[in-house]
Amino acid sequence: MRAIDTVAWTETLGVGRKELPWALKAKARQVADLYEDVNRIRATLAHGPDEELVMMLTAATRSLAAAGTRIAETLGDVNRTA
Image (cartoon, rainbow, N blue to C red; front, top):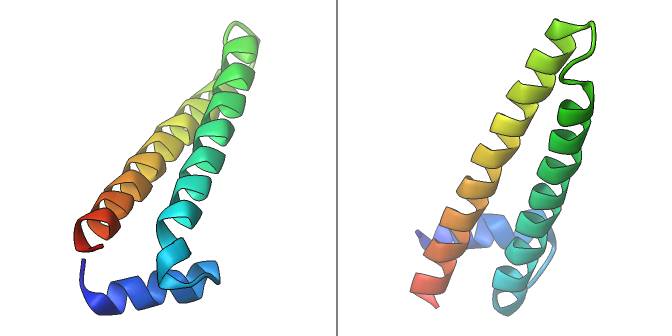
């Protein structure tokens, strides 16, 4: 990770450099929790009459999974530069 990226992340999250890994882990957990919530909603409505809604929820779970992966990669970059 470039130093400017670290600075941008600390400014974005409102933390210092030493707190950045903790803050990113917290954000990763939030995204994982959202993924689980949306996935439960999708599963509940999967056999309902609104197929388009289920497709939207499926897309949302995919996006949340991708976002979680991206945060994990960023956290890995931060840990490598520590």
